[in-house]
Length: 542
Image (cartoon, rainbow, N blue to C red; front, side):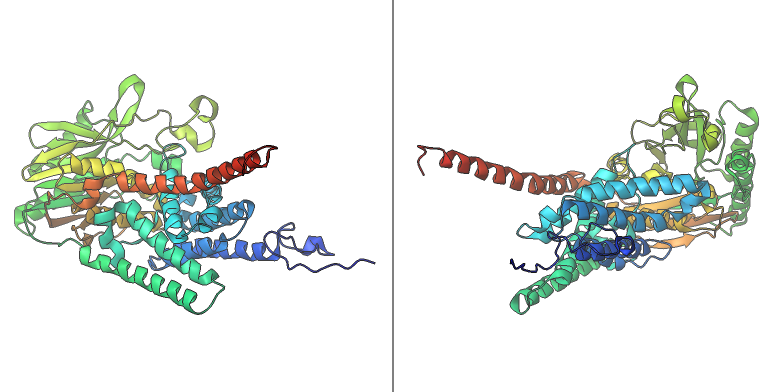
């Protein structure tokens, strides 16, 4: 007769199989692992709530902390499942506005981002086993956000932790550490909290962790002292025009809208009347939104005449959002500077194009499917920054979602810009009344203002348009789905923040450290095993 010793079910020892496997959640995983897989999506939901429209910024620490706690001490398979579950629960709600394009784009992008996050999460358990684990986990978070901001198809930077902090006291750190560094600081705080949540010992060890976490939070809060001032130095009066468009129901109807330019001309004429009457100051520059013309206005006499008369009546240059003709029958999404009398001149072309929106990968294979037929031509990406010099203003432009790319904004500031413009067309994403996309974009623009100590003017076809000072404060904003305009005096700064000076190096360094932490321990283990094999050979000396 033999006796069996009962072994508790752990991540490494599967629990006894149930007599009713059909009623068991995720059979094959231990009970503790299944509980972790419930913890991870809860963290994803909390992280999504940190971003607009809810904007509960403290959850940008608590949400990731639940994910990091879920993957501590587990196997790679469980880490992948937990990371994927977190990604689904995070990206799904945050990108809910994509449903305006149909269920397929929303589900497809959510699933792609979640699976990528799950694959990246496979490395987290190994980092948790290292001494000083919260630091290495924070490096991993920076590396993970860097990867998904670049891959696949140029990446998708939306939803980075730093972009949830527009109203948080941590925002000041972005001017020193950049968006990647601020995200890393939040992730480090989250990792310390996860350590507390999963700690088993009591007494001095637990107290030490608690004090460390409190110190981390206190350090993060000191970012409030790093916010740039909102006043001081030279300034310029800038206007943003929101012409509005019909609130169409389908993409096909939206594509046939021809009133966009007329609406912006009408709003600009109203602005000119206010200026002539003395009710508003004369602006130095006016910004129209992305797609405020739906074709190249330069060779089109009717369109050119409409814009030219509006600009001449106002008497100041206007940055027009235009679709310009490009090479080989393709087109450009551009900001075109239109001056009084002389007309259209220099332009900036959008560099980061939207896959399946401004170009179609594998066009020959899938270009004729569904709504993709509404994109008969691919756009040509721009090749670098451009600055527009108008009186005291040296303006650089970001078009729509490329404001989320660090290098695009940083290169514009390094090119000499003392004012940043963001031209956008949010009409497609707002048809169901959702304000998630424009509010998230506004938050990113506010983060960029602090990161580079620059004022920002955000112009949208349908809202939300806004003027933002270098401290990230929104001084004026429009309501959605209304024809309107804003006029504001904004500081013009030429300072170089530490974040702009350091450029991509903090992100590159932290990413390299994460990679080294993942790769070097296995190398050490293989080296030790090789030495043991040599030592164990007959005749070998110890």
